[in-house]
Length: 58
Image (cartoon, rainbow, N blue to C red; front, side):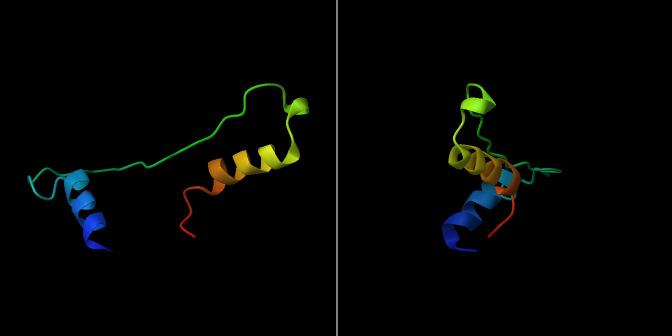
């Protein structure tokens, strides 16, 4: 990990203050507004890609 990421992890996990973190959830999602029938295939595939594959490191 790079130095900036290490610092962020230390802050989030409480490593610098002795606080214990039991779980961390990092989730981002996307929702299309409107009817599915009116949605372009590309928009639908982008939403599915972000929502279902976004947590997998590539």
